[in-house]
Length: 231
Image (tube, rainbow, N blue to C red; front, top):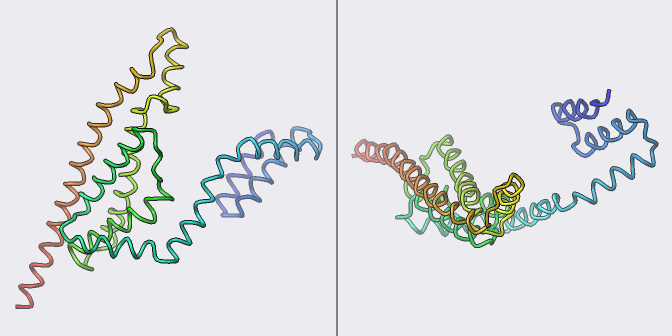
């Protein structure tokens, strides 16, 4: 019975009920099973919310991004990138990953998926593909381009964050090693992370080059066949 809260959450999410209502119901149910009175339940829920309120701050960016898109941010990004006809999808995403690695390696958090990839990087990558190959690009390839745009942010962030020696991951590694009798300096951890960041970037560039090659083989061949057919 103590796990009834988990069961409520699973059922509620599976049936797509209101998220907040499901979580609150799960918390109240768990409290009642634990023989807590209503005041204790409300106090526990309130304390948990206040203690973890920082995790909800990213929600503030969602309406801001929505307003930016409503007033043409996404459209302007696509229009801008379409003018650069020689810029490929892979080159654009490799450039963004490099910028992401440099900034996160300096301890500067540059956007992320909701703030940067969704409204800017992904539309620009799609625009680069359309500028190069026209409107003939299939939806499955557009989905792949969007996935690559998301991956470019993940790779830039994940493999370079430990280059900054004051990063929480570096501090965790140093404290964990110190706890088992292997004291290390955070600068040592950061130095080890530099080759990892470089190797991951090189591999990602190769991956993007292969994406460009596949798109070129597929759509350049279609375009040439279309031209021959018209002649």
